[in-house]
Length: 102
Image (cartoon, rainbow, N blue to C red; front, side, top):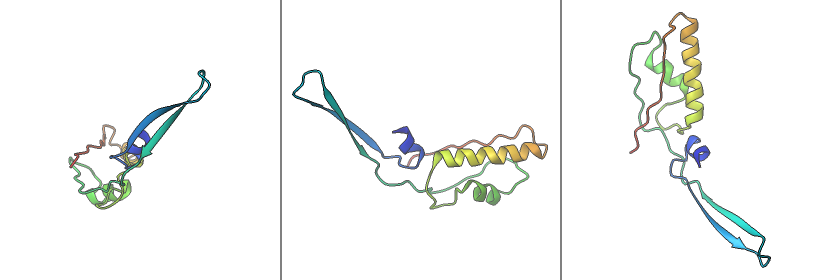
């Protein structure tokens, strides 16, 4: 389920049941997956000081309002921006993702 959450399906649910076979040594585990709807980014706030503009960071991390919320992609993009800043001499650069459920 974490994988679905990371891909933007924050309302995903998984349930399971066991189906017994007439053979007492066998059973089948059935997983019912409901991904739900893809979560969209409602707002973006960039805090702190950076030589890069907020708009540039938002564009590079693909976090514009209305875009799908895909945690893994955003975290990879944040790491890329951090590495770029460090190569430019901002060795203590740190970018973090904070989410607020609505």
